[in-house]
Length: 128
Image (tube, rainbow, N blue to C red):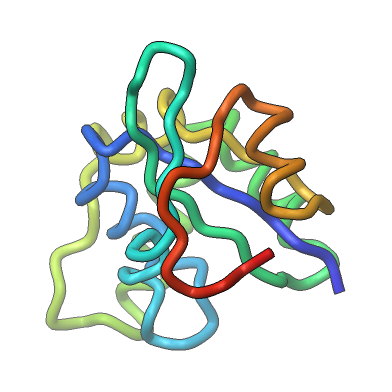
């Protein structure tokens, strides 16, 4: 199984959580960023999600991170299928996610954070 680390600035936490909900195979995706926190060299705080994923998900995520309308369409399709009572994120939310998210595949948590210039500061789930 592959892994993926997604880190988003706290300034886009709400939008990022809405986007992440569409890519979690269960219904808890909106909580994906609730546990791990890291900071960059400027002291900006990031919420991080480090999880196992399907073999194709990192490549799919990389492609969607290049195209906000495609990301929006994928998120909308998932919300229409699973979250009909929740308003999906806007195109602006998807654009903010793309602009702010740092994504690393196939890594341990701390190695992945270090590769994008982040240092773990809070971890409540004992992920190592």
